Image (cartoon, rainbow, N blue to C red; front, side, top):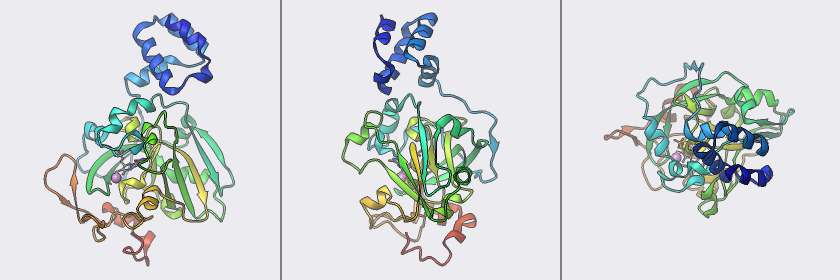
Amino acid sequence: MLIKKSEDIKSSEITPQELYLNRRQFMLSASVTAVSAGAALAGFDLFRGASQALAAEQISNLKKSSYSTSEKQNSFKDITNYNNFYELGPDKEDPAANAKYLTPIRPWTVAVEGEVKKPKTYDIDALTKLSPLEERVYRLRCVEAWSMVIPWIGFPLNTLIKLAEPTGNAKFIQFVTLHDPKRMPGQKLPIMEWPYVEGLRMDEAMHPLTILSVGLYGQVLPPQNGAPIRVVVPWKYGFKSIKSIVKIRFVEKQPPASWNMMQPQEYGFYSNVNPEVDHPRWTQATERRIGEFLRRKTLMFNGYGDQVAQLYSGMDLKKFY
Ligand SMILES: Nc1nc2c(c(=O)[nH]1)N[C@H]1C(S)=C(S)[C@@H](COP(=O)(O)O)O[C@H]1N2
Ligand SMILES: [Mo]
């Protein structure tokens, strides 16, 4: 009966959510032959989707990065159950609970466009193969004064930038998250302007610490952490590390950034971690590492000052917060 049903639906009419449910149904009730027939008819690889929904795909042959911190890593449970991802809900527990809406995570493309000689729309699987994947254990410092240590998997954003060949006009890069309220139900709520957007100055984007992440803890990125691909900029407050991106646009002027647009007095464009510049409503001098009881001192540039301070030499960081 299930197979009959899938024959009746044109693949173009199947929403990701329905597809996800269908795959689950196939997994639970159909025989192997029936699944293959159904898959062929619907034009989808059902096995792949089903296994994605039930067990995470592992990533092997990872290079270890010299940029990694040796600090104690937060648990997989903390990293995947205490999240900020408004597209999947406003509370810290929401993104894990609503991860199912963003599954399956294929098809997915990322458009590289704007002031570049080689604009290109990459399929996510091709994009992931551009560069050897590394494990990068970074501190993440949220503007809400908590932090975590996360073993990301990814590659330097500058690999992609070099392939795109920016023109002389490319001074900044804008990043754009997927806008699809069906897969991102939080976008039905008027809590932000959608889609979420962020930006970096070109030299920040080119810095070897800035990565595109496609996984963590040895497996593909869970939806709640920004699957299938997100930015990670470890010396800036967490909100600069935009999740689930579909567009990377090279621009001449400083691009709009979601939190900066919403509350410009509270969130600047640069948003470098800075214990000396308090948020108007709370201190940034200390932070609570998730899983710990005592607060620790927040470090300038989140402890990455040796590598990045020179990017801001001569700038008044109280003005450009
Ligand atoms: N698209 C999008 N990206 C986002 C957010 C968001 O709400 N939407 N939240 C940001 C914030 S405030 C933080 S602290 C980090 C959290 O990343 P993590 O959940 O993987 O730890 O994601 C950032 N990226
Ligand atoms: Mo954050």
